[in-house]
Length: 263
Image (cartoon, rainbow, N blue to C red; front, side, top):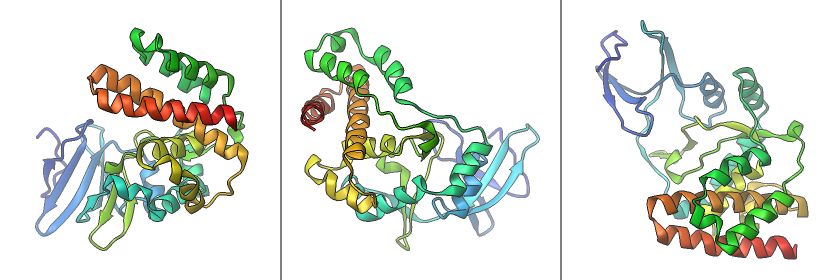
């Protein structure tokens, strides 16, 4: 282990994509350690969105190690993402002035519809770009880009995978792994979550649980970001040869595209 935070702490890698997360133990103490976590983490801890921040330490290498309370628990199951408690926490995130001010302070950038489309197009394999549904869906997305002003953007998590929700043994629910946090239309988060975890016929009920008035504008924006998410998953699944997942999202994309035309 190259990292050394001294003071008698032992570090155990927890895996993951970044390789920067560890379990730290010292005598009877146990903490969750993250290397070079964003200063944004402090605001998330204050808001009770993530487990409590215990300490922050700068290493001799210049890296920064943060320690959070270690909680026994589990990640959410896919079906649990439909529950009201998930919707309500996401509403708190999107409407927190503290999170907004802190992300601004640490240089958080915005994610716009135009940027999402610009990233999406090269991600689609040539075969997919020839697919009639994908062609029509992409064309409609370009025409129907949401016009919400960036001054109305809020803090969005950007990666609402069910594995990023931690349910403690005491039934406290937390949202973790904020590396993809961005300023965006809240519908950016909502569309992705609904697309992945909530049956289409339950979207209206879930949005009501989220706590916003269901206006035609909000419905249209959620539909737009859900279609973008569908295309992103289709592109990724094609490259990974996970064709069942790809086909499921093609079916949903067709339904959402049809709904956007009739609304």
